[in-house]
Length: 327
Length: 243
Image (cartoon, rainbow over all chains, first blue to last red; front, side, top):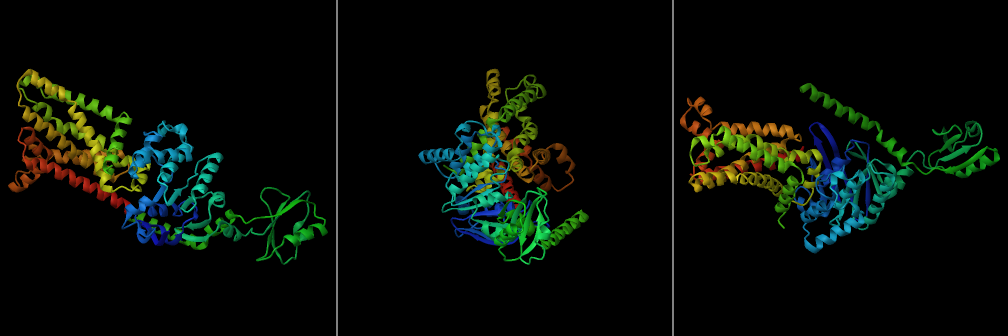
């Protein structure tokens, strides 16, 4: 179990992580969501022991990263942002180095390297130097070093950033396969990824947790949860047809098409049956209509644009200006 | 296997995986040749010793060693591999010393490849080979001293050129404070201050070792000097971790 309590990380006047607390249990795949600069990477860097916390603590299986870093580091597999590796080593040499540092030798070392090369499909680039590899392969080499010791905790900072759709699919499949009885923390700003691989999502911005729940729950909190999408075949005044209905909060025209509308329900109302009835009785020129699942993206945008945040940003900006003046 | 040795092997292999090691060794040999035969007047002196060869080492190292040391940490920071390295289960002391040792072995290798000059002087005359061995040892220790400063300066910045310049500047201070020019300028001061300044210089300790006077204190000076700067490197890296 990872337990983060009251974690704060300050860089001079800038607070990157602000009193963050949460726990992650075995078997959870936690998606760490947030706009750029939200504090995702910083939090990961503190958990892995690359940065030390200004305040608060991080414990992994009861070991505190500040007092027992070696124990924590042996439990964690970490893919830093951008998947850094030594460019003039070959894939095999690099994995060999990581395996030795992780304390493996001889048969055990060979077995682990062999396994990870198969799992991440690196066979074809074993003897190539890392700086000649494509972005996708470099990312996979980074992933390979992170999972080589079959870690209990896997921390991946933007594991699919910059990969093509096939590679993304492959990496996600790999993460899902690894996830059993492990703790996986993934940071990303690709929201579909969270729905695809995570069992839990935390949205952070300005170094604070704004939302915490399963991806489904968070989608359910979206303004679009339970909305009906209606595609018409010809011009028709839907606004007028639905005017005065208490269950329908708003009728929005979709961005993509002039004859595509989104009907938003009032709080806690199911409107699918009603809309279906009205469409038939009112003879709407309907091409198709369906229930919209909540949009994580929409929820993400609405919480990360919170006004409280804006004021915090302003405060940080103000302190930055003060620094400049001092200079 | 000892983790320090794993780091050491990786670093040393890293030097030879790129042209860096070869360029360093070749330039080192060419430069020491020029210094010895041209500026040091090796033949013209008509003496069977290697004084002109070793005498220029502090000045040769002043530019050659910072070139090796500048990348020790700055490059790791720039490429982000420091994040990988520092999150692996390995003690900071092992990393600091492993890296230093790899760079030092490269310098010692370059130094040992100057052996033809030792053969030459033995062919031409009857030098005191004990003095020459002592001088080689002193030179290697001095190279370690330069390197340890470079390790610390490289840990300070992510820009290796800045690390190079800082290292040259600080090394220059530690070489120059033993020269007569500097010691004459401070001759107004009490004798113990002049001695202290001279005692901090590489020149003072290297000169006495290279004359064949293998005093424990001179060897100890370099050992303590290296240990202190490596310790400072580790502190700098720890401080960076907090910021």
